Length: 307
Image (cartoon, rainbow, N blue to C red; front, side):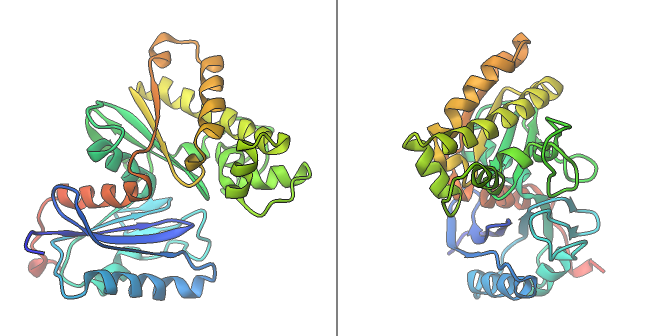
C-alpha cells in the first residue's frame, strides 16, 4: 500500500466497521464486527478491530463516525442505541489504540451523508439530507457542498424530530419521534403488538414484500413518520435531495413506495416538492467513506507538538 491512507471507523448500534481509505475512496483491509450487547465488551471489540485493520500501517489520520449524540469538542459520545456509552471518551480510546494520528469525530449519519455526497447518490448535489434507517434513525446535512454538523456536532438528527406528540415513547425519552415509528426495532415492536410473530426487521421486510398485512402496515406506518420528518427538514433547510440508507432501507420498495406516496400526500410547497428521494448507492460503506472524507478534509496536525 504505497499511497497515503486514513483509518476510517464507523460505530453504530448494529455493527462496528473499519478500513484504510485513500484519497480516491478506495477501501483497504475492511473489517467489521457486530456491536457487542454487553457494554463491557465494547472497548475490547473496538481495540481488536482497529489493531487488526491498521496492522503495521501508519494512517495519516483517523476519521471516527459514531452514533449520536456526539460531542466532538470534548471527544465524547452518548449514543442513544448504545446504552453502555454515556459521555464516553471515545477519542481518547482511539488515540490510545492508534497513537500519533489525529482523530476527527463526526456523527455516523452525518458521515453517511458526506460519503454519499462524495461518492454515492448525492454526487453533484448542492444540498442534501442523508438518512440512515436501521437500529435507530439518524440524519446528516450537506449544505452548499459542505457537511453541516452544527455547533454541537449533531445537526440533521431527524430521528428525534417529533412527528406525533401523542405517539409512542422513543428511546431518547421524548414521545412521537420519527425513530419511534420508523426504526427497525420500532416497526417490529408495533407489528408484534398486532399479532406478528417474526424474529426481526429483516423478516418483517420479507413478509411485507410478500404482502402480509401487518408487515405492510408496519412499513406504511414507519414511512408516514419518515415522510413527515423529511418534509419538515426540507421545508426548513431547502435541500435538493434526500438519500436513505441503512439496514431497514435495504428492504427497498416496501419502504420507498409508501414513503414516496406519503411524501406526495403531505407536501404542499413547490420548493419542497422538487426534492428527489434516492436509496443509498454506497450501502454499508457510506458511513465509513464519510468518516474517511472527514479525516481527509481535516487540516494536517503536527501531532508531535500536541499536548
